[in-house]
Structures are given as C-alpha cells and as structure tokens.
Image (cartoon, rainbow, N blue to C red):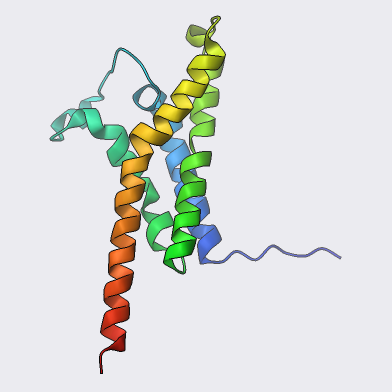
Length: 146
C-alpha cells in the first residue's frame, strides 16, 4: 500500500520559492557567483542600484517562503531551507563550466556558495522575515482588541 505525500501550504511555499530562486540563479549564474568582472544585464540597468540585482531577485523569489507559510516559525524554517538549498544547482552549473575547471575549483565552489548565501540571500531573507513577524504581530494585536 502506498501513501500519498500530502502537500500543504508550507510544502508549496518551499517548493515555489526553491524552484524560483534556483531557476533565477541558474539563468543568471554569473550574477550570483563571485567574480571580479560583473556584467549587468540590459534590463537591470534601469534600476537604481543594478549591482544589487541578485538581492532583488532573491527578495522576490523568497516572498512565497516568507508569506505563504502557516506561521512565523515555519516561515523561518522554509526560508532557511530555501536559502541553503537553492544555490546548489547554480553552484553545479558553475563547477561544471569549463572556464572554472582549475586547481582551485573546490575552494572557488565553496566560496561561491557562501557568497551567494551570505551576500545575496541573507539580507533579503532577514527583511522578509522581519516584515512577516511585524505583520503577524499587528494582526494578532488587532484580533485581541475588543
């Protein structure tokens, strides 16, 4: 007898954010991985701070993980898992690129992973979780008032 794995809001939020963020990171792997040369796409040059494009994209992709979950503790878990797992496909693309194949590949791969998580995803994730916490507190205070 097989058991069907039920998908709830938390699973769907995790899947949506992880697929979105992983896809964006693979499409624009050069934007997310560490590089001395930073090529900004034409569509990004219209923004006020085009060098922050990876953070903007991470912010947009993490919205489902932060706001579609059941509660704030689940949002923290889903955002953390998304931020830690989403860079893996982009890092794989980077590692299998022939231009990256040299003696320092392992170090560069680990450094790029940490770079993506800390430099591009940490601040957007924190902003979203603080916003979710503030909204949750505000809604709880409104519900408690007579």
